[in-house]
Image 1 (cartoon, one colour):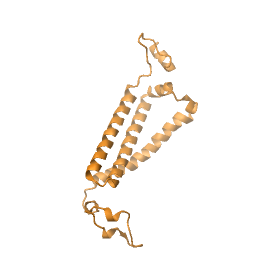
Image 2: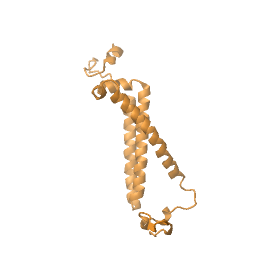
Image 3: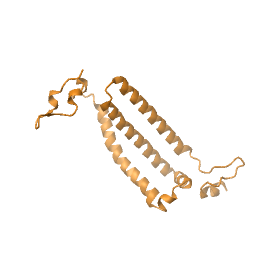
Length: 169
C-alpha cells in the first residue's frame, strides 16, 4: 500500500526525499487538523529539553563542583539532600521530565521505523509499561527514602548520616 509521493521530489535538485517510496498515503500531509497531539508532543520535546538542560546542569554543579566533588557522593550525601523538600521536588521533576522526554522520543522512533502495525503496538506497549514502572519506582524511592536506618534493637546503623544522630537523639 505504498505509493510514491510526487510532492516528495525536491524541486531544486530533482532528488526524492528520503524513504519517500515507503510512505503510506495515510501519513502524507493534508490540510486536516488531526495532528494536534503530534504538535503538542513536538512542543513538549522542545520545552522539556530546555528545562532538562537547566535541571541537569544545576544537579551536576551541586553534586560535583560544590564541596568535595565526586568524593562526597555517598548514602549520607543523598540522605542529606533528600532531607530538603526542594531537592526531592527537583529530582522528582528531573526524573519525570527525563522519562517522559525519552519515552516520547522512543515513541517517535518506533512510529518512524516499525513498519507493521502489530510490531508498532507491541513496542509501544513495552515502552509505556517500562516507563510507567520506572517513573513509579523512582517516585516511590524519592518520597519513601529513609536515611536514618535502625537495627532490630532500635540503634542507629553505623552507615547513617551524621544528622540522624541529632534527629534520633
